[in-house]
Image 1: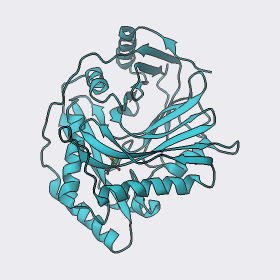
Image 2 (image 1 turned 90 degrees about the vertical axis):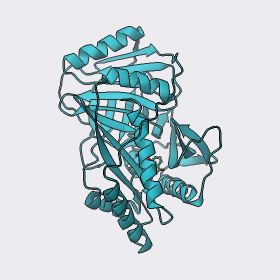
Image 3 (image 1 turned 30 degrees about the vertical axis):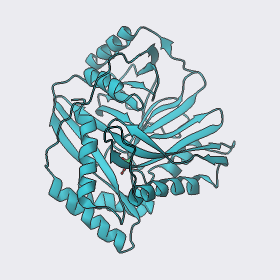
Length: 353
Ligand SMILES: C=C(O[C@H]1C=CC=C(C(=O)O)[C@@H]1O)C(=O)O
């Protein structure tokens, strides 16, 4: 089994720079609320795929389950202590209004589909291109400071590209026969010290995710426990979250389990197939790895799996960052507010640039 070797923090960053300079694949990441940072290095530039999810390594899977899920082989696996020291504050950066009309038209189109009874919910997204002079490590260090309760990462494969993110959403973890997952949806901006003032729209859209997950899992898992809905902060945004735990049976197949849950209505919609079709037909771009999932697959001393949904993320190509943001549309959506929500999510990433 692969266990990470403990090394000094400076050495971790040095090794990552060396790996990038040598054009070889790596992942550097930190789990939510943790004081550790991990790296997985692959010694060659072969594009390996996770086929039956029995493999061990760092998984990077796209939104579209028909496309390949990339697996970085853990030829070297390191961990180091990482303590956030400086308290830094958000720098307010305002995104431009570019693409507003198209996005609002798309939202209106989806609301019509919902009102016609063809869809219940659909998550619509867009991408924003921004110039940056920051290095990926500088951005990661900033993400680690700003988004301590997120899964922060940089992933690189010379044949695929580089991605960076700070995801607030765990897809699942599997540890000693226990599955943990979350239903995360609904967004409001954090205003001073005030509590989030949820409306029916957000409560409903999050409940749809919980109901979907429970429906998908009830046939195959035992002892399902569901927490109360709580408000959590992801940077300067509030989300609604429910924790779900269940016991795995011997018959459970990890790949099957994952694709029952993915894509959930937090990133796709309801009914799943129709929402996916609507997204493909109307979003106007390929999501690629945005709203896919990533993380450790059967890795570490006890071969755990811990995967996160690829949200609040961007792809990086030389001086260009492409930020991906979306939001759930229901019958109660207000198009202007939905646009503003994607602007707020964009700020999360802009603050790293
Ligand atoms: C699709 C995204 O967020 C999802 C996760 C949390 C809240 C969401 C929402 O309020 O719409 C989305 O379902 C995104 O950040 O790009």
